[in-house]
Amino acid sequence: MGRTMAEKILSRAADAPDARAGDYVTARADRVMAHEAFTVCALQLRRLGIDRVFDPERVLVILDHYFPAPTEQMARGHVIARSLSEQFGLKHFLGHAGICHQVLTERGHVLPGQLVFGTDSHSTTYGAIGAAGTGIGLTEMTWVLATGELWLLVPPTVRFVLDGTLGDAVMSKDVVLWLAGRFGTEVAQYRAIEFAGPLAAGMSVASRMTMANMGVELGAKFAFFEADDVTLAYLRSRAPAASAGVEAFGPDEDAEYEAVHAVDVSGLEPQIACPHNPGNVRPVSEVAGTPVHQAFLGSCTNARLEDLEVAARILKGRRVHPATRLLVTPASQQVAVDAAREGVLETLLEAGAHVTASGCGACPGGHGGLIAGGEVCISSTNRNFRGRMGSADAEVYLGSPASVAAAAVAGKIVDPRELW
Image (cartoon, rainbow, N blue to C red; front, side, top):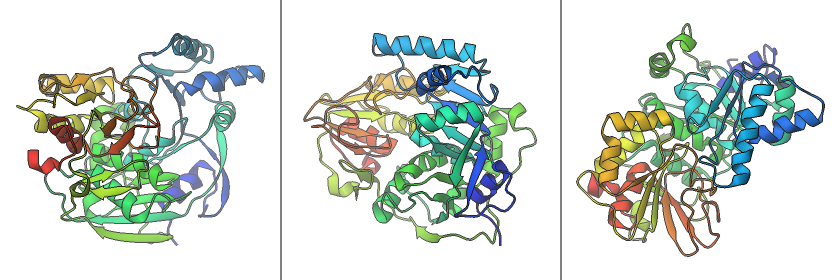
């Protein structure tokens, strides 16, 4: 019997040649990612008398959730994180390069078939290039920093076979929101997801990252796309040295799945997740006309160059509605540079958008775009829980970059196909 992607990766990482779903294994990390939480974990190591990490080459630290620092306390935390990274001899302190998942992927720090532990729940994003990424808590991360290992239950896998053609202004974000609405946010609870089929194979890495990122909103431990020619071309264009010799990676043809869902998304309407749950999804036609005070284009879900280009296409020659503010936060400094070179940022700025420093920004409600009670925000982010982006009395709707840009122009939720 063949193996799923999760079974293959954990078998190798745990040195357990035939690990199967339901087995417990102790797996060794290929990469460990920590954002501001590194300070907490490193200080705990010090308190335990530990002055090293398991492998300074495999640990990467990036400061993205609170950049620029919104408080003096957080600024001090950044200073401590830099100092501790030096003291522990880390080889990859990435500073303020952008959002963790975007930066690690675009720089080739994560490769197909690897196991990645991160201090962020959306570490499933690395599945876009065929890696097993999962978020862990501070206690677990402290242990992993010291030992490089963590015990895991090998998850069963749910496979979504995606077919069909997406219409104008319909994006991979609409597909994953539709899946959340149709199958629910627990369809893959402590399971792995494999996104497959003709539609998945035709997606760019940027589009795959959106869906893998939101795999955790379906409950997933890991969320994979096969590492195919698209993946390899992406990695070789950005990190030729790191990706040299890297090969395609995917499941065996005879792998066994807990469930297989074949879906055809032809004719799919843009989707909107309504407050206060990513699974509370409606077609845009059912919520069109909802006034919007803030439109946010950012986060590890949808702020890559591809996303900014879509927004610029809709905003070109138009203006942001006077009653609405549009915030654009590129996913990384490199994305911002590329968008500037292509004139994308110029188009957004001319339309009235406000472009902020690369980082998580408004998404987790830390700073850079909080919303007040009674306000409505449409966001390209992954979560719209009550109070996540500011006041508990505010409402957050989730949509694609096309839906966000269209709402910014109209001052209300509208079908982005009308402005395409």
